[in-house]
Length: 172
Image 1 (cartoon, rainbow, N blue to C red):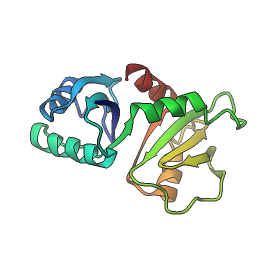
Image 2: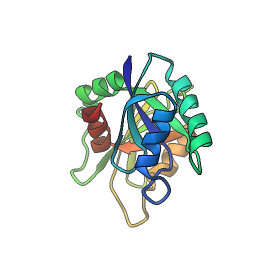
Image 3: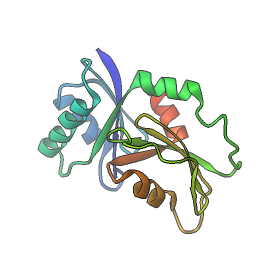
Image 4: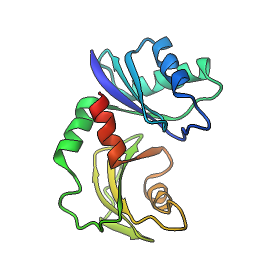
């Protein structure tokens, strides 16, 4: 059995109850289920399987057991732990007020874009497999970096702050 983290795109406290998400995962046959924060992060145990297959199982379970479903991207706890330990931001000069975020891609990037990519205070710093590392300075215009992410990688993505990723690793 292996530990995984499911990242659900578009979840907020207003549109999904964490207790219902937890129960849905348990009905799908997963064990050791924990939600982390209220933004669609679910840690669980499952038999070793391809992450895309686990995501499909979760999406099907949500369609059956919840009022709505959310797109899901799954990463193994071991993969996330290795990301945190590698500190992918260490080699970059990032302003102290900048937010560090990780975007999880639904599938590997076909072509490595020329990096860094910068726009409106956001910088895509690195792409490693299906993980994108970005830093942005918050502005009154909201999270403008998401437009840059979606323009570069499409919409089959979900993004978490670096602190959230670290909390998910700690919970796994």
